[in-house]
Image: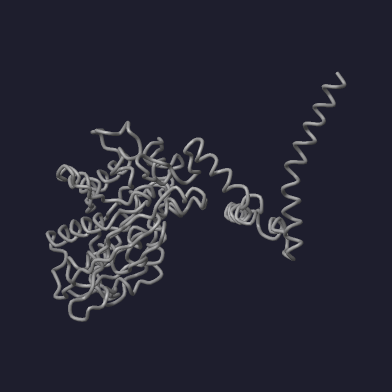
Length: 394
């Protein structure tokens, strides 16, 4: 009996030492480095959800044990289980997928919040935004961006090879609701599916990058052609007179899904991806494409608009290629991960950007329908300025 009790005490003490030694060692490291122990921050700010999340993130980044031991532990998981951590999934033939994007597709969840909060329902936010723009005489085109797993499910799992049913069911449901409400929507999942069906045998064209969450330059070009054709056919704008040329540029890059793992040992197992980009340059000056805030078209979106455009090589993303199709420069607001609410909040703070606009194109990645930063808040636009289309005398 005494032996069992002593063993219990020994195990409990060992467990407590293991737990507290990490925190105490971290405090010691910070004091030796003449830093204020991070744990004190818990008592220096209001214990709100946002502050606690920020503290947790900062602690994870600052923890010596996490920085030194986590990469090797995760590397061992990769070698034994092909587990790439909480953000990434390993698909077939070296394809990598962003885990939240896959969760959005496969996990059940309600479209409308159980508490009936409209900011959790993108439909309400989109229709409200459409109506506010319409009051100014501005048209809205919505472009939900399908994730890579929606377009290439067979590269995630062999079980999806030959699958006929739609993968992005939640996205298709939202698109159907928006169309019934009279919102103009581009269904890029259908665009990419039709393009893949037309590919002849042996054509290795990819519309998404194998190591990245984002589309390839071919996907960018196809989407730009599709959007330009729609707004021109609707008569919302006329083609301009600016001529653009294409300049091929080859990049060698590691994808963001691989980089966000932050485990160099895993990166050693992958080679950089060769990406054939097409930069857009003005024919008259030879200069790379640049936005024009006074344009008739404003584009809102997330990192799908940032890649190739603001990133290397620059002026080779969706915005530049759409401008080439329309033959005039565009205005844009781009926020990584913030297309659900943050881009509209920024637009609300800069209403002058709506002056002279005829069309707003709003892109957001489909996983934001569920996981959008700041949810789907209704963002009131300020009163129209005198020169906005809705305020002009007929």
